[in-house]
Length: 503
Image (cartoon, rainbow, N blue to C red):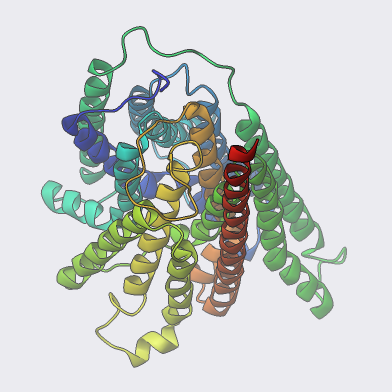
């Protein structure tokens, strides 16, 4: 077993799981902020117009791309960097950047962002990427028998963050934002638990460390290419919409308006698909079907995480916490199935279906027919679906080939904790799925936020379920393909064992 992969004590595992949950909740609240800002900037007068809106949109897009790329860059240095200290630096940087960005970059700003605001926004994006990248790195350096617990805790934080927000809001008695008291309190607690996990991890570090291998830069390069394609596609979309919005005589004809609407709506979908295919191709090359499934799941989960659970705690707190609890329990169920019976069913695809079907239920017409159930009709299937899929998918990707001695396709129980000889490989695979989620959310942000803000729910009600449904179908295909490959490998090993005695 490589000394760079350790088998921690129970205390260190509990501390790591707590830190992973804190980082997951922190990231769901702040990691998608650049994507949301890009969507808000796109709402100005219906379409982005003018150099001021372009500068704000570019800043938000670059910030979102930075959040997606940083975890893959951190994963490339998995043999050289400790995990939790990197996450600690990211948390501190994100908080300090938010404190220094006086006024921030508003939803509809009256002037272009200053140099200080630009630096603060990019620093906050870098901090969010470092926090998540450090958690993935710490996860990859664990043995599989303990790794799945920390992976499940990270997924639980990503899903259950609304409950964490409300708890800090109640404890602080103030609004939940960067300028209020709740957000600094959550960051402070996150820093505390990550510090404890970092100290325990350092105390249990193997004497002399493990061998330092060559950095695995493939995931970082693939993520950078996908991020550049996303940025280029969205900038081209901005230019086309701005250039063709009005005719040279200042008028808007029906054909021109229809063309601009089509470009504004369909081009983000095309951009998201192209970037996802780049990540999917590299993931399959380095991790075959299991890694590809994690990237497809990330692509589908990105828009769902962007939309969020839409919980209302005021006056309906008991229902809201019931939804959060159901989501966390779904994470536990998915993680358990990934650990014990990964070959039984494609639970990542199964979980995506209720989450996708919940999106059209957010239509105001449907909500008007179901009074008093705002916290159940949409949030409950969304939480259960996301929890099941993320819990299963993250654990499956974290305990992939090379981490478990038993055949990954037979779903056997009791696999040995033999360790992963290359934690950078596991960290890189995890980072690819995270990048797919962030870039799909960033690319689709204009469509998602525009439909949410101006009441055009029919757009998101069609786009998200279709994309998520197609992703679920791809997951089923990859599941079947992986099972077929595993069966062929077992047959080949059986034949080789039968021929050996006769030689």
